[in-house]
Structures are given as structure tokens and as C-alpha cells.
Figure 1 (cartoon, helix red, strand yellow):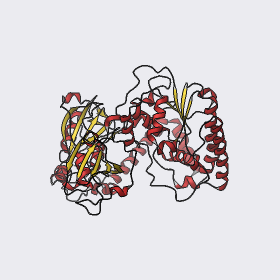
Figure 2 (cartoon, helix red, strand yellow; figure 1 turned 180 degrees about the vertical axis):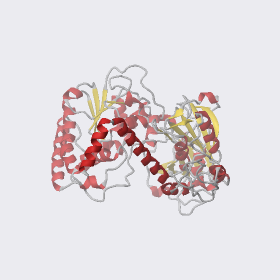
Figure 3 (cartoon, one colour; figure 1 turned 45 degrees about the vertical axis):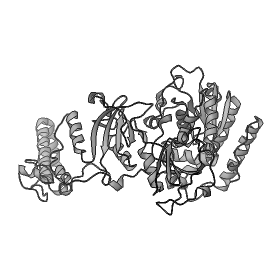
Length: 563
């Protein structure tokens, strides 16, 4: 056997062409055997016929000589999965037939044809009504809004608006979604709605100050809900109620739902129940919602719902509807370059993104960042892409704590948060994203102890460095900002050199949560801090408290310790 192999080797060395020819024939034969084993017979699609006519059935189109079998049978028998539609859409008898006639998805079509056919296919669920003019100071659709400069699609906007019970969904600038119950603007030329959706290039998502608007066809009248109204409290009747709450309606069969629905239809964010009278309006200096009364003063039963309270003629029971207060939603870059750089400084997890949201609403100007976070830019923080020294933004987010970095700024708002809460928030962000949560394995594994050991000292040194090297530092405690937003935001806006409009600040109070607030539904069922960790963090708290008091500032809030 060995002699035979030696002879073959010598033979092919002398005639290498024959060797490569034989190798090629061998590989070709193997390929044919493999193809034959993978493609033999015809597709076994239930209900389909043989031959080209089979394309009318619910299965795969006819594929000519190459037929599917074996491993491909499972795929052939699977029902076609169409585009996901929410439960709020009407279902019609035409839909299965339309899906069956969809034919070969591999056919080539132009982008315009795909967009048009997609729009026509949505007719039964969301009817396109046209391109409309929009205005940043007076929106065409005045319900809730959200932005996504990376993944916005027509369906996503429709789905979000429909889930909140709105009748219309509008898309603008390729990435902005607006909801509403009324279209309050004139038509524009279809050619002006010319921007592709950021997450779906085959569809159009409005244009510059132009909305592509759809009317949402809800499954049934009972689905026309207005989301969950937010209870604001019991308040004394304002002196001039016809000015403070300009729209009212007598309702002999009063209930909370009826008054909330009435004010929602009228596009007002506040619904105030006064016995058998329903009042609608905005929070203003005439009706600030700052001085709450005992709820027992409003505890008069509703005429139309015995288990609900509807307030009295003197004490109003107030709810916030799902209508967005647009008096503070317009934002832009500074018209002239800022002469001073103002830092919005905080330890990570201390609420910097939330504070930016509040400042943008209160001032009407974008905030910038020392870093670049694509997810924040995609959610509407347009100043995120600007260089931090550009001078186009009202203040600059930073977590830096070195002397050189701190001295680069002319003044600063220093946001401080309870270290126990800040460390957990930053740990969640690090392992779960801006509004996500760290997995249970991260809390129980080595990641959490290592994180606390590295970040807890930084919480203290960050504050100490800004107090030492910072110029004109305004200290704001996160807990005080949550507890008394109006007063604390006034202080912050004052440092930025902006004259605070009270009505705008009141508007901010109604829109304070923004898009970067964790739901709180996944709170840990145990305390992740060990006694050793608590002892270490308590020492840092005392150090920061002493440093604040040495500068004649109020110390840390009482709820920082004991823990």
C-alpha cells in the first residue's frame, strides 16, 4: 500500500495538471451530491397546487426547477407573518386576502411605489390625510410628542399615539412624532413633506415645519380613551375663574371621566371639577396649583358616579389631562454666541439629564455636553452634537472633576444627589442604559462591590473639587429640585442669565418627567449595600456636609443619613 502511494505521488509530481483536474472533478461531484440531497421533490405547502399556479395559495411562490423539501419544509408550512399592527386597528375581512395576494417579496420596486403601496395598505388602520403646516410656537397637533432621530417609523408614531387614545398622529422632520385630537392648521403641498423616516427610508415622515398626518381608525368607540389623567389635588377656587380657567361646561350628570374627556377635546391640560361645573385651562399665575388644600374639602360625591368626588363650587378637584402644554416646548440654539460657559456639573446618576430637560423647557434653549451621547441626541437633545465650547447652548453637561476641567467654566450649577440613590442609578445606567435596569446577576456578582469601591469616593471628591476650584457655583440638591421644582428651577434659570417667565415655569411643572425617567417598577427587593459599604459612604456624606457648611451653604438633606 505504501509503495502504491509513493508511485501515485511521483506520478502527480511529473504531471500536476492531471492532479488538479482530478481534484476539480472530485469537488464537482461532491457538490452535485450535496445539492441533490438538499433539493429534491416539490414543496409540500398545504393547499397549494403544482406548477406556476401555486402562487395564489398562502404559501411560497413557485420556484421552477429548484423545489424545497426536507429542512425547508418547516419554513414552507409556516403561516406568513405580516407587519405587526396594534390592537387598536380595525380588522377587516379584506386583510387575509390582501396578505395572500402579496406575491413574491423579492420583486423589485422603486422607493416611491413601496411608500405608496404601504400607505394604501394602512388605509383600514390609519388613513393618511395629507401634509400640513406646523409651527413651533403653536403646534398643529397639541397632544403628547416624542422624538427619535435614529429609529422613527410611521407605524411607531401611529402606535404610540393610538395607545394614548389620540385621533391623529403626525410625523415631522423625519424623526418627530406629534399626537392630537384636532388638526389646527392649513394644508401644505405634498412636495413639502419630503423627508424620509429615520428608521424606515421607504416612507415619508413630514418635512421642515411640515407634518405628514394620519387619522387613526380605532377599533371601536370605547377605545377612544384619553389615557390616565393625573390627579393634581384639591385647590381653592381662583378669584376670577372665567379668566383663570376660560372654558367651562355645566354637567348635571358629572363624573371625573366626563370632565377630563371634555377638557381633552377642548385641548386643555387641566380639568377642574366644581360640583356640576367642569372648568378647563392652563396652570398660570392666577391658578398655580402650588397651594393644595385638604382633600376632604373637595369630597362631594359626583352626580353621575357615586364612588367619585367632584369637588364643590368653592374647592376644585383638579386633574391633568393627556393634552401636552405646548407653552414651553419650543427650543432653539442661542441666537448669539454665549460670552460665558456655564457648567451643569454632577456626579453620574445624580439627575443631570433630567435637569437638562427642565432647563431646556424653562429657557427655550438647547443644552450642550462635554461628551457626545448618541442616544440622548436621538431623543431630542440637539445640543449634544455641538462642541462644548461652541457657545450655542445655554449650559454644558459635565461629570468632570479635575482642576483644569473645572476652571474651563465661568460658572456652574452643581447638582448633588443622595449617594445611595446616585450610585444605584449610575449602576443601572451602566448595565441597563439610560432608562433600563442592571440585571440581577450584576447586583449579586462582583460588578456591584467593585463599582461601589471605585465610585463612592468619586461622589465625594467630585463635590469637593467643584467647591474648591469652581467659579460662582450654585449648589442644587436633586431632592430639593424634586420637592420644590418651581423655586429651584427659578434659581437655576437666574444663574443662566435668563428672565424666568412664570407661566413657562408652570408649564414645565406639568411636563417635568421627560423621556429619561425609570419606571420604578423593577426596584430591588433587598438592600444591595453591605454594612461595610454603608459605613464607608456615611463617612463621605459627613465630609461633603462639612465642606458645604464651611462655605455658608446648607448641608446635605436629612434623608442622606442615617440609612
